[in-house]
Amino acid sequence: MVIEMDQQSFLNIIDKTPLVSVDLIIENPAGEVLLGKRLNRPAQGFWFVPGGRIRKNETIADAIRRVSSVELGMELSLQDSILLGAFDHIYTDNFAGVEGINTHYVALGHKFILPHMPDIKTDQQHEEMHWIKIDALLNDDHVHPNTKLYFIRDK
Image (tube, rainbow, N blue to C red; front, side, top):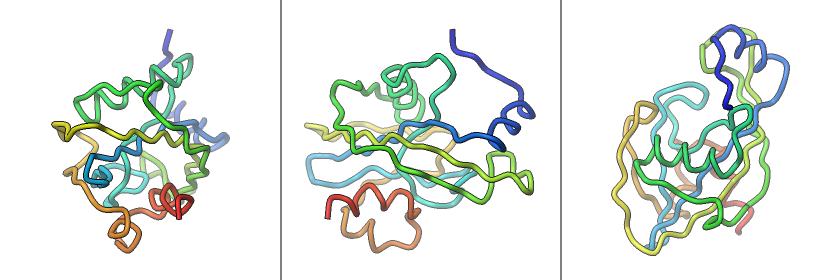
């Protein structure tokens, strides 16, 4: 059973421990990567790969299915991914904007190379989604540095 909690309990956890998340690095047949412009904290206003935290008692495979369904309107499978590794994403703020509490994610980067151009929907966390070439992504100040880390390793 996946466990949910109230905002204050979640803030207490964020203040004291890292969160584990899955990030979805999705590449289309043209070699472009999917990014969303974030509406929420942390990384608000930046272009970022889709992703989200793993909930208590949720498997990595289930988290990938849930996050991809909610954020993209398509279901991705762990078995179709290439694990890029674990990445530290440390932010000075938190989802609620409460002063003095930073956020630390240990993000598990999973790469998906899609054989066709999918239909992507925008969710409540993203102002818009777009496809971008890796070289352009690395040189764009509006792409969050934590997203760029997934592509610097490939260079």
